[in-house]
Amino acid sequence: MRLGSHLSVSKGFDKTAEIAHDLGANTFQFFTRNPRGGAARKIDEKEIIAWQAVRKKYDLLHIVGHLPYTVNMAAQTERPYAFAKMVVADDLQRMEAVGIEYLVIHPGSHTGAGVGKGIERIVSCLEEAFLPHLGKTMLLLETMAGQGTEIGSVEEIAEIMERLGFPQNLGVCLDSCHLTGAGYDFKQPTEVDRLINDLQNTIGLERVKAVHLNDSKFAPGTHKDRHARIGEGYLGKEGILNFITHPFIRKLPLILETPVNDYQEYGEEIAMLRAWVEEKEQKRRG
Ligand SMILES: [Zn+2]
Image (cartoon, rainbow, N blue to C red; front, side, top):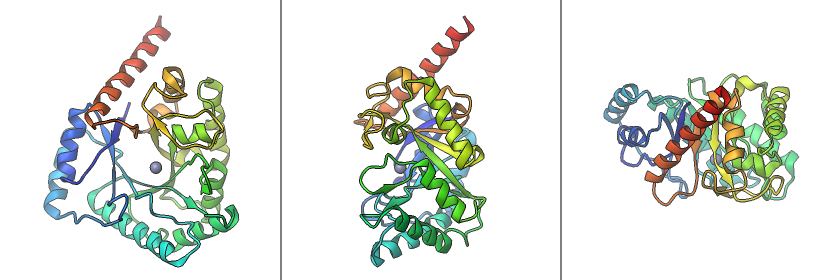
């Protein structure tokens, strides 16, 4: 199982790799730039070389860069829209240079203009800032809870991809908390199957590349995006296990973004999750 958490890379990718390994992780996620202001850190050649060596040593794969929350590809006004286009193009290049496999972005919020207009902006933004990029880093659109004017249901993401002609390096990142908010109830194992069917019939399973693994403070269908620590939210141990032991989900990199007090606590969550999965498998074997 590929399991990790969100970590800071402000001291360098090589240092973060050491931290991830110490936490028992074999993948991780990080912000590509300051999540509030949007300023980007310069990543030099020396750091990249050190990072490549240490990630190989520790078998760190399927690394995920996350764009700042302030990036809104569905923005209806010029300044934030221009910023979104600049950041998408720039971070695709920056992540390519570091050898990061996936770059995750929230599709955007239409801020009252309507879903149709929001999707139009997202599609134009991606045509301009993403399609000319022919690298190895895949851009992943994240499934959202539908809070406020947020775009990002499975169907909406499928529409964006279809309008772009399903480009090869465009994929999807799931989020167990957001999907709960959107109406899937993973306390029922059949609801995980329903999600997988919905993905298969719209986006295509081969495009689903990463998972944000979070418990949810709120119940299914509330359209609320409030992460809870693993086992301490609506999903609990049962819901989390139904989700991550599904044969499709368990093959994906699982990234924790839970509200811990200190990143060391991610190590505890990782160990607990591995123990839960082992316990469930032992029961199944009898
Ligand atoms: Zn996200």
